[in-house]
Length: 172
Ligand SMILES: [Zn+2]
Image (tube, rainbow, N blue to C red; front, side):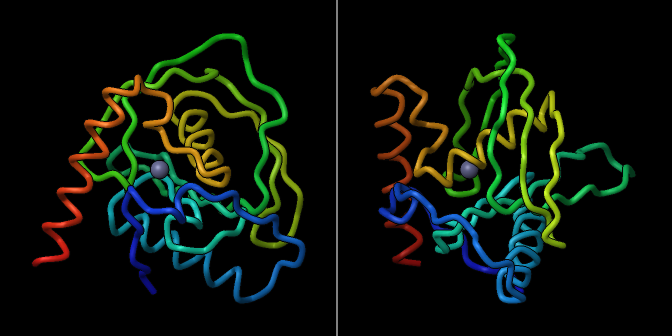
């Protein structure tokens, strides 16, 4: 079942999400809903606070090549264990900030630990778009958005555009 995505600015996007202690069927259903919502958007990552749930859960699938098999990842309690000194700059966007994009620089490679859908602990190194995406999504769990990396003026400009968009959508 698709869930509505919360748009910036919204206080729920600024909060720190709680760790998952027990993996319930309800949380698995939430993860499946989030994947469906993400693919439908379409997007390559989604964090639980973006659908109004303050739980440390993210989903991602950064396979963008046409015809290549999907690789959906469900990550409970994801955390970055190590980051490379080497940096990478990507033009990022966010499903909570539609149609706005900006360059963000982050570590090029990260080692990430998480609990998967079956409750198993996994550790994996990620690079390229996957590394950017997983860091962007983990930031959401700490109430941080990609625009927080931008200069204040650029951030305010995007926030004003989003306020306008939300007003227009509320009227529609
Ligand atoms: Zn985002």
